[in-house]
Image (cartoon, rainbow, N blue to C red):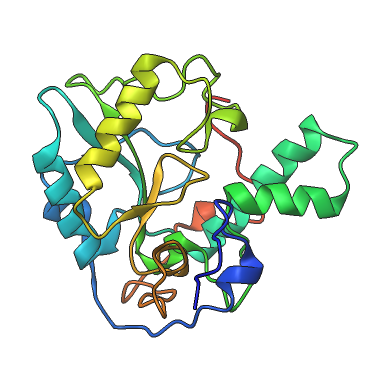
Length: 240
């Protein structure tokens, strides 16, 4: 039977049809497990955790070994707790609402769901909550980022998709280098966000045609949220 055409937006309605068969793979600290990778600057003001599933860490190491000289992998975030996901969703909702006050809630939800996973869909846990997803970019030795988005402003949603039209030659090359580094690993790219890659979650299963996801939501043993982060305040980008 011919496989259904997949959408780069990976809609919740499609993802919820994919069962999750949790395999129990543990999480590891990528700062320890992946010495060739770096922790990039924060995008929001909350305590970030540096955790990913074991095979995600292995993929990071494989990709780092394939990068050209003077290119370094900088990870923004791996595992993300649900209370932070909720605040992030509310923050992105607020941002689009301020920019487009005429949009209906239905349109807002459709757009926001494309760029940050909803926190209230039990059958579709946010990718970062599984430990199988990472956000990352390429940086120079001094930590400054290579161009990923020109001629767009980096906060312009028009440049978010991996195949965004009209990118400069430098931005296109940066993305190509990132793709080439991960080409032979288990991680695959969420096509609506050039920086977001995952393995084992429902998005990975959807884009790869796998029968089931192997990672569901998880939490490290003994995890205690930072009290300063345990609020309902929507998150705002630090330098938007």
